[in-house]
Image (cartoon, rainbow, N blue to C red):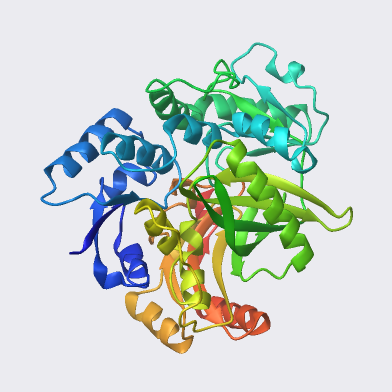
Length: 431
């Protein structure tokens, strides 16, 4: 009998990706929750979402064998709620809350990998004279403790930038603060966690940098494992916007091993168990030091097509195995390419979209460049400032997944495709 696997916010793209897992015909994949409830809603109606999802699972005519997810906030927290309610294994809600909250996570991280932890401090953006109370010297980053995709993350080089960032943060922090508060009201936090520094606070952190990558792994029964390392490349004025992810990593093996060691110490310290995870790192080559940027108690959806290209199947295989109570067996099957990447096409100034490719245009390009999938994020006539979920310094207008025989060919093919992609903008029309 097929196992019923529920996937939060399952769309057609990821349903296709899921069919690459080992023994895919032994699973039935079902969507849980409405896609638009999870992905960039104007408001996260948490209690309504929990009620709706619970009703879906209760009304299902069959066994609910596993619940998995790959989206960012609030998916990991939703998973914890649904799994507990339906008697399924996985990390507890309090420990997921700790890993999602940037300040709480840093406190735990500092206990076990202080050498990978930048200087940081909490900031209450609503406090009178908040700017004067920050002890870190300029420059530093100011971020809400709950956010993703660098939303409301500001590089602070002077008091003027700080005042503006605090004002914008106060205006927007409720988008994530309110729903996070709904989850904290459902449980007791660990005693070492300062609950007074809640989801309406920020964290100030000293800048870290270097060559960036992400370790993809899982923890089962207290033992953490890493099965892949993906490089990350950035662009922009403050080098803050992702331009591509690439598998496998080109960092020296000795550096990867140091990151893996730090990851294996960090995850248990967060109280996480029986879950996939990923941790973002920097290698400061000049000073030969490793910095840890953030942790996610889930696999990265952005990396899924890369694992398919290089290893033959999506790393959802790990999430499925863990959710079903099995030791994951993730290894290369029938890889097509030796390297693969997700390229993110960005604009760094607001503009009006004057032309987008047709379906026929995209099919021709995907045929001309085998192993390519193109996703357009904009519509003709819209302003880029209307895009939801963007970082503070750029607009992601399209995504290109691509595989190749070597890194040089990969980059060359992408540059050729980018020139041929009929995607046009008018910055003057946005004034």
